[in-house]
Structure formats: structure tokens, C-alpha cells
Image (cartoon, rainbow over all chains, first blue to last red; front, top):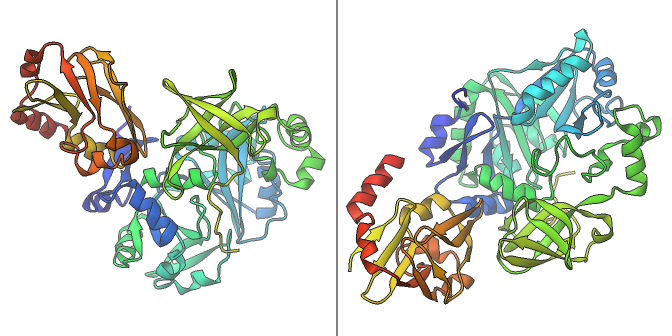
Length: 366
Length: 124
């Protein structure tokens, strides 16, 4: 096994008292000295800084209209009509129409910027290389860091450095200049809060983090808080909630398939996906609110009475709610919000109620 | 009363009658915020190295092993409502269970404070 890679902020994390752990081929902070709950709360109540440089940054070059047509062979969203400087969340499909990855795509003047999951980067590149014509051959961008600043005070904290960010609304992205170097700023994230992601040269990562850290509104946060925040926000985690065994309709991601694409059925597995969007999948991806304090984690079996009707794919304690929550797949007849279920955790059966996602309302700046 | 430790980061202290067991300060730090402690039933018989409790932190569930064999005489009910007590006082009010040991002499075979400290030093 190769030595895990370090991000440009590695030394900075260590200085901040981070506990560093291996994750998807990288060494990343799981938490800092303050702990996951305080980092989680900092993001909900003020602002948190996350190093997400492990995520794969892929550039698909060429005329963006032509590239959109090519990308649409793998992505079931309407990319052709997405304007320059706008981002979209979608999925990359296998030949069978199952989820190869989930990703963000942003149209720029000279192509498309993709941000994909770290553990899927190599597979995604191979899939795109096989699917896109030579003019749009995907390039894995090297030497770039990706830092996310998330939370209700993120805008004020960031605007002190880059006042232009105030002009962005949710899912806008544009190039700005910091210390004379180009930085691509997107108003999005994966916490359910307003916030930004900064794609910057590695050399700028340290000065950027150091400047933000001087702002008392901003708290560094690790993978632990990132996970509890996205879980409360009802957002899927690849490799847990979604993978190549499910299609986007079954995963509750039918909404990424645009109307035009549903009608044209011009993407892998379209027949099955369109049929499942219309009639509903046999199993649905749902949220569950647990009684008591015992969390149910990935793999916990879901019961309706004595009958096993599903499984938990993500679960844990929700710091903003003060009790455990879970997401997973359950048979369609037990998927209606309000349905009472039981989750098997060791020798306990924990009472749970199907809950509409997200658990914590999104607060995007639209 | 001397406190002994296991290589799995439990501590045990015997008062001549009952052996109080908890997780070490080091274990608490590694786990992070504790949100639930799954305690055994009073009366349960455990063997040394049996998984006898589970501590749930925000990020994961971890087994807690019995350092010695015995019968569970008492569990720390304070952890039910306030699992964070494990973070605040792992080697004090955050204890997990009290056992009636099958063989109290087995406690002497565990690590003393210096040996445990040396073990922890090799981990960081």
C-alpha cells in the first residue's frame, strides 16, 4: 500500500491539535482538540473551515456546450442548459445505470470543473476517459487544495478577504484573485449550511487558513463533524448510502434526473430509472429518528414488527438535535414519514420513526 | 488501593469486595465525545476479556472488555442520562461497572500505572 498522501495543510492541522487519520488514501483530521460536537455546533452557529483537498478535482476541457453533450452520456442531469458559472449536484452512472459516484459539476468558459469523491477519483477518471471524446479528455488537477468554509457567518468571514463572494448565490462559482493568484470560489458545500468552497493553489492553502483562523468566528473542523453535519442535512455519503448497487431513483436522487432527460431516456439504465421514478422503487431511501440515545450505525437491520424490512446505511448522534438519527433503505410500504420501525442494535431494538429528509433544514443562500 | 490497567485501555480498582471498572483517560481522549454507554445487566457473569459494555462516541461504537471475570454487581446509572461524564471524568465518576471478582488476585497480573503509561507512550 502506498504511503497516504498529505494535504498542503498537513502541518497546520497538526499545529491545531488535529487527530489525523488515514482516509481514502490521504491523512486527514478526524477532529481537532475541541471535539466533533463543538466543531459541528461551530458550523451550525458560526463558521467552520474544512480541508477537503482529498476530493478529486477533475477538469473536462473544451467547448462547454460540446463537453456538456459528452458528459450527459454519463450524467443524467440537464447540463446543456446550465449557464457558465453555475454548479449542479449530480451522479456519474455506470453502464448499468447505477451510481458510480456523486459529484458537483460547474460550467466554466473553457470546460467543466468536476469535484468527485476521493475514493472514487481513479474509477471516475477511467469511466470518463472511456466515455468522452479526445477533445474533452478529463484531467486530474494537481497541486490544488480545496477548502470549505461553511456556516451562517461564512460569508462575513470570507468577505473580509474576498469581498466579491457577497455577489454569489447558492451554486454560483467564479474565479477570484487572492494575493494575485486565481482562486475558484463556489457558493456550496455539504453541510446543509450556507458556505463556500475554495479551489486554490497548494501554496495559498496555508496563508488562506491562517488568515481565516485569525477570525474568531471560524473554527477548524474535521471529517467527524463533516459526517454528522451531512447526515443531519440528509445528504448521501458515497460508499455508504449510495454505491454501484443502486440507481439514482432508488437512492432518492431521482430529482437529479432532469425532465428533458426523463423524456429523452438518453442515459445508461434510463428505462429502469424513469420507471422507478414514476412508480417508486421497491425499497426507498429514508430518514429515521431514533428514540432514546443509542445510535444505530451502518448495517443495523430495520424491522417492522418481526419482519426485517430494510437496513441502515448511515447513522449516528445528531448534535444539533440532541438524539440519534439514521438513513437507510426500507421496503416501500414502510417508507412513509411517521411509520414506526425498530432498529436492531446489538441486543436492543430501538424504536424509530420514518422522518422526511433533511433532519435539519438547509439554509442555503438562494 | 492500587489501580491497574489493561492493554485495551480499561482500568480496574479493587476495594477488597468490588472491582470498579472504567475506561482510561487516554481511551476517553481517543474516543472523543461520548453519546451513549451500553451497560451490562446487573447479575450478568462475565469472563476476563469478554466484551461487557459498548461505548458510543459521535463517530463509532467501541467495545469495553472485562479486565477480570466476575459478576456484575452494579452499573453506573449516572451515565444513562449523562454519557459525557466519561469524557469529563473517565477515571472517576465516569466508571462503568462494579464486579464481584471471581478471582481478585487476577487484578495483580494487569498493568500498573507506570506500565500502562509506557504503553500509551508507544501509541502516540
